[in-house]
Length: 397
Image 1 (cartoon, rainbow, N blue to C red):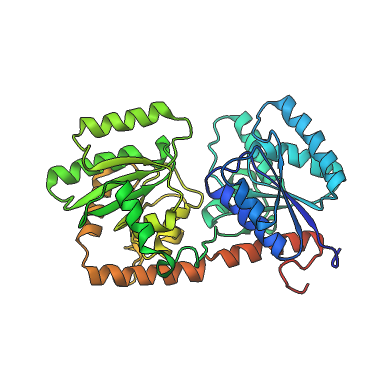
Image 2: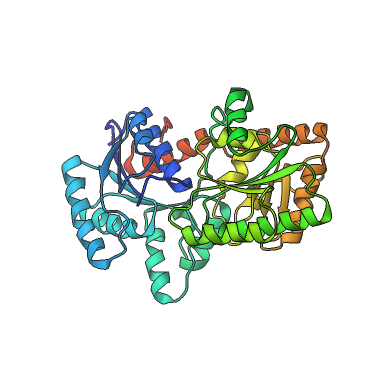
């Protein structure tokens, strides 16, 4: 198949927001740019147009269903699509559709790849079996070393079937020099940030384990201690239907008397500008992040980052005591400890402009060297080439 331009089918429940969804778009772009054909099966979402702009094709499909009968029915439909579109390889990025894709790929005798995007809780044998489909692929792509170790520990997956490919950041998109100051000013205006006020940004979908409550509590501590200085805290993220959680967050903000300091601003499309508008960014997750793209995106924008020291962020953020103060790119704190988070925020707010600038430059260099989008695309295409005998990555076998 070395001379053939392969057709790669990716399947994901929705194309809305999140690391898995963005990776789907980015890999579709890589496939098309390499001369292949990229098809995505999904229920759709706000990123559909972005997919089409890459030259990728969308097939609207009930990919989110966890109903066992629907999974089997979907497997039959995928098998028919594989035959009709002459699909050469299937790449699944979520568990429910992965079962349908796995059954279809095995039936059609074509390679099957998964990307293990999340830590996935495993409570009971049934849940472990359900999750195990992500480790049944010919190649399992782990988005961090933490994720790779998790896969091996849970399923005894051989090392030669696991490929660690870090989530990549586009250095051109996430480049302070490419951001029109008007974009930054517009966001600060939308958030009600006054001239001279600094932004502490927590960009994450509104979900309990993302740690918004911890951030609110940390802000309350900082204000009570007089250490919040001239800063406001922006909680930026889509609710995705969690109206009760949003109401409880707003109630917590009101109860703490932080209405003028902590703001829920909803989903933000322009993340590069949001990070540039901020003095420090936070990853406050109380459960392990399999990768945690905010940590790398903030660093490449030259924005210091505070992340919890669980999951993958310790692989992406250079922080004491692992590194010295003059080589650090951010802070790592224990999860669900508001006082420790408050201390890190206070340290970030107290840093001199010169030291912050130097930290930001180190952080950008660090991410561009270790977590580039170019490397992620290249290494994923190499996985396809290994299974298909093609040369999408431009490497010789």
